[in-house]
Length: 53
Image (cartoon, rainbow, N blue to C red):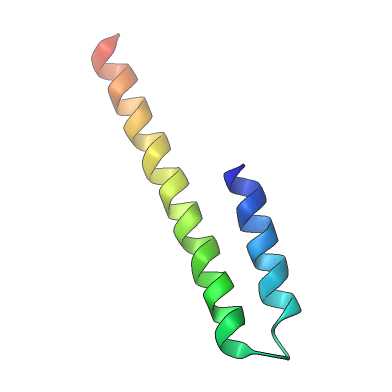
């Protein structure tokens, strides 16, 4: 799901590049935030699994 959001955001950013630069930048930042959250959640999940087992 997260990867899908990133792909759609990047496609929207490219789509709006000529029309509206602020909207395009918003989609790029949104894709970056989703990617960072995915990495953070994955890292936390691995740490919790390591502590349990």
